[in-house]
Length: 239
Image 1 (cartoon, one colour):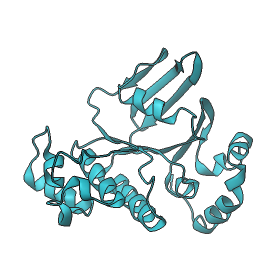
Image 2 (image 1 turned 90 degrees about the vertical axis):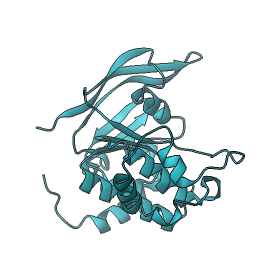
Image 3 (image 1 turned 180 degrees about the horizontal axis):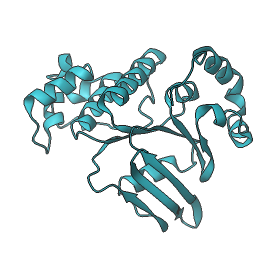
Image 4 (image 1 turned 120 degrees about the horizontal axis):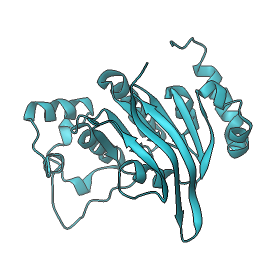
């Protein structure tokens, strides 16, 4: 039985009297890859901030394993153009890192060739890989990714999602990823959590595809999604 790393119990949150999260409950277990999906304004980023301890819910609780180590990549990160800092300087900022581990992480995320580049000059794809590298330097057992492929072109998205999949498989950390890319969600996730202020549905990709609430929320994407999903899933899953 996999160990529970994060337990979210009946979490609710409101802003200015408007409900953002309504009695949200789920568990993230060791080795899982949960993708959090939902329309804009569904409360996904607020839920991530609660998990990170950045904001407190109005009610409910989040219980984390005592020795948990969280790695996090934000949805948006814009470096200050008036403060020159290299990629290497950014990775080392406010933390002591063993050089060998730093460079092996840079190699893993394919940023070793840009370590001396200024952070403000990076492309979108380069920045996402740098943010991922910094998250991995925490040696996380939980990696939280808030729409990591946002604003990347299709090629950049494919490379980043492949990198995240490889990290999940080789590093052994659990992953909780917010994503709008349903095609990728269905290919990589062990669990899909569909949020629209409350949890509409949660389960393995195969069961989510048959859920009426999921179909209602993503009706405009279902034809493309089903074609892609069936094409990539002509194999058996291991338990």
